[in-house]
Length: 146
Image (cartoon, rainbow, N blue to C red; front, side, top):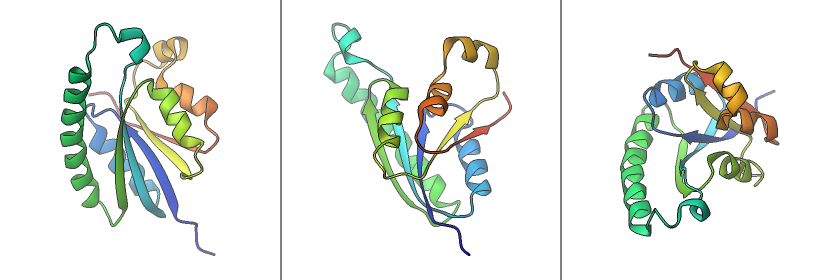
């Protein structure tokens, strides 16, 4: 019996090591057919609208777009995946969870740098929020701190 092809949601923050954890995670999953990369500019516009103009957000989206295109090229070198991406603005955990509820994805693959576990536990990281509320499985790929 063959495994069902997976459609992955892969939130990224472009931090150091992003390429490494994506490569590591994909190497563990031999049945991935599509990857949807998701970068979220972490702003809740209602809270910062007085301070952040649309020009600043658009500038951030352009920077993210260039980084995303480079990341897509790199992931294409890992294997033949159907890759798409989205750049959103808002609360990262909320947007990831909204995407996980669309029915378009079989799994979320997220990276974790492997430090500050205690701090994250008490403060609540995006990864922990997603793990606790996602309706689909979440694969957390850890990488050692630099």
